[in-house]
Length: 89
Image (cartoon, rainbow, N blue to C red; front, side, top):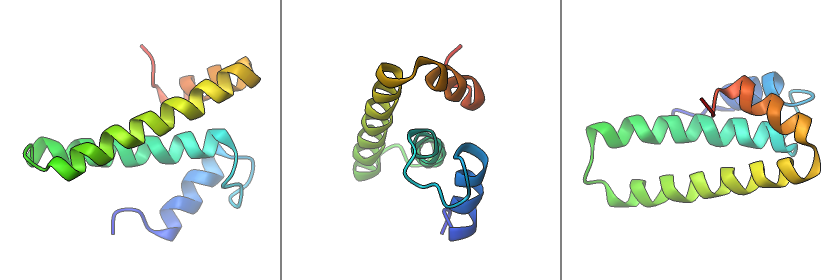
């Protein structure tokens, strides 16, 4: 599987407060971003995979909602995660 327990722990450790911090908005956005990148690569090779395309759109929406929440609560944390993940140009 592309997303093992070790990979999740690494993502949470890098973007969250601790490696066990699975609930913070930053760690969730980072996990969504990793999954979105994986599904995007899959769809480049399998463009007729409609269920994966649906799942990708759903993940993008979830990430957008998390980012909106973060932006409304703490703009500095929002700007930091955007810069760290490279989501905006």
